Image (cartoon, rainbow, N blue to C red; front, side, top):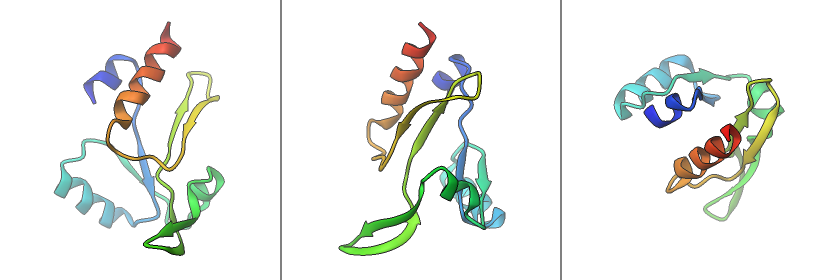
Length: 101
């Protein structure tokens, strides 16, 4: 997280889980990222990161792991959809560095 902070970035997570469930998850995994609760799914639906996805060969409703880079003026600068965790942070850092130069 320090690399993101050095670039002036704020990292947040959001899911439809309750605040209590998120707190438990945050503590269990020592996440270090504030998690926002969207139990009615209004924010995650508006951003397009909640909806139909394939899971074990079936179509289900759920979170579509995504990352949004929002610039200092509040404009959406980049979207990564269907994110795979491995190597993703480095890609986001690269985009942040490019935006700073």
